[in-house]
Length: 235
Image (cartoon, rainbow, N blue to C red; front, side, top):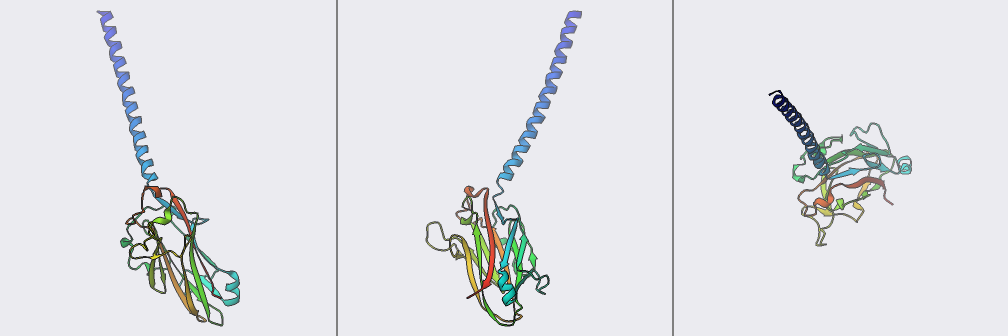
């Protein structure tokens, strides 16, 4: 009887230990599964829009600033004048439908990013004594995973918006509701025919990944793109 009791005690002790081990393993597996789900979610954050310091850069030639009086500012009152602006932007974004971007996107100064889009409003002033024509260009570089295939840029110049996109992959023309990129590395080039002394021009740049674009595919996952704008005197 004593021997049988010892055997039963040993059996139950082993069974309890095995049960504790099983529960521990299940907790560990559950934790690993949760981590895997989180990691998978992070992987599907599609892309990054960036510059050298995680910013969208706008710059004018310092010679033009000195000689012709061109200056930049995030304020319509033209405070804190400079030859270069750096707008802090989101490190990573996923695709959205352009229709969700607010109608008043051009009415807020400085950086006013939304969920999965980048928005930046700034001003250019001629503080010189003579009127000058100005040129501007929005350039992109360091493109990976074909991110430029689905990227959109909406540029407001003095309140007038134009949306730009890469030519359709089959070469049949622009994406619906857009104007084609100027080239493979330049989103657009434009010109202000005359910026009079004291006159201020207003710009708003909006960038996003268009979810309705047929080229917004899994291959874009992890893609990157650097975008920056330059302004100069037109000669």
